[in-house]
Length: 115
Image 1 (cartoon, rainbow, N blue to C red):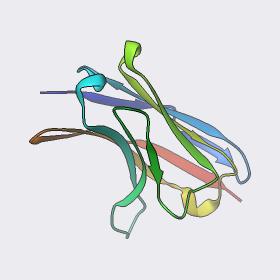
Image 2: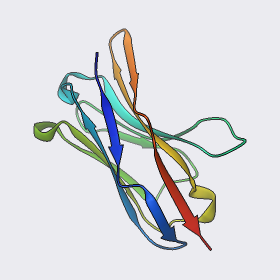
Image 3: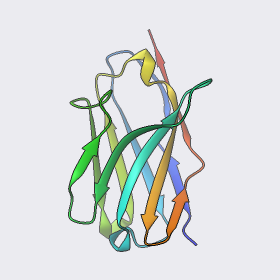
């Protein structure tokens, strides 16, 4: 099994930036893709971003142009650079790893955006 540990969450003012990290105990280079999801209180989990094995990325409509996902295979770490943050971006952000036949989730990191 793979363990995913998110870090980098915290409190930021609207318009500010934050960088999240997801450290994996497994080889992210062996994954089909790595991604980020988020969930705010009273809402369903929302897709944020994904990156596949060759570096192709995709983003949820609400974060396009503001967030960037990247990865460092040597460090088995995935990042989410979050710019121009809005109060509606506040949520618990979860790292996700997908392998053939398997899915893994981190415990989440809280992002709070003040206005």
